[in-house]
Image 1 (tube, rainbow, N blue to C red):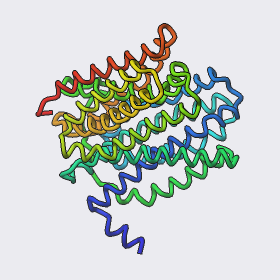
Image 2 (tube, rainbow, N blue to C red):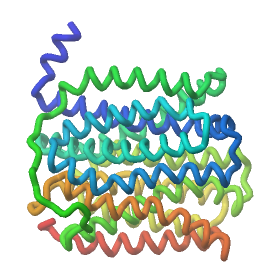
Image 3 (cartoon, helix red, strand yellow):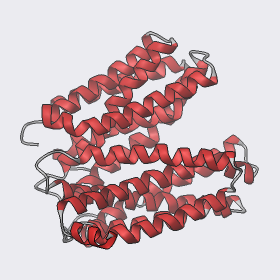
Image 4 (cartoon, helix red, strand yellow):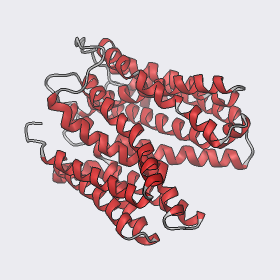
Length: 386
């Protein structure tokens, strides 16, 4: 009966969409599962905060180093094959951090982990754009909503594993084997598409037509990662809030991100992509301004919700627009935009720390509000032809 169901889904838009959704879930579930075991792995290697911070930096290095390779691979192979390679590598490496006995081993694992996540995520988004072309309605933000939902699920499983004193090595190994089995089941349902065979430079910045989208992506990723890294510290240092209130604020932010992504496709169909991007930029700016101007628990939580709603749909919608580029393949367009976008993800949060050290974290959040204003300006430059 199950085999009949799968056979009926093959080569159908519904099947393609289901398979792509599963791969988004695998990505979010795997990444948050690793994140949930970071404290245990840090303790296992007896590392200080500074030492472990240096180790963690191997992940973004691996991600950025493989960006040009990913663009080349996506032009040589179909996004389907590239996604399979990335997913398998991602889950094989996911099994390894708990077994690291030395710091250099963990750094090497994280370097490869970052590289595999980059290949997996970019090819996964390129595959999602292929599926989007089969639908008259917007479906892109829902894929990313599933990623966020998977993040909650992975964190929840990690909490259970921690409370039951399950070693990270067994937890991540078991998860890896399970998800590899899921990949083997759903890969046959993915959409078959030909590689673009597009000739491009090994490394190139986005062309003029994509530059504004790259800047919008830069701002959104910078704001999102700033919230991941600094929202809790903002509550502790500026508001002097309790740990319970600090955790609640982050949960509100993450819930807003997930809810915004589930509602995003409906919003696009109702108001259009450009309007949703405009509202997103306004929400990001207003959220950081509110947190700056009224540094009290309830107004700041409301500000975090606004920021969460603002960043929720920006990147998937930018990818959706980029996928319609007449000059570049979907893979090349996404990779070019992501090259700039990930710089925001990596560079801006540390800058928030420097500004906080020199001035105050409130002023760092004001700078983030200024970035939101830049995003408003860049969205206004999007024309109907884009």
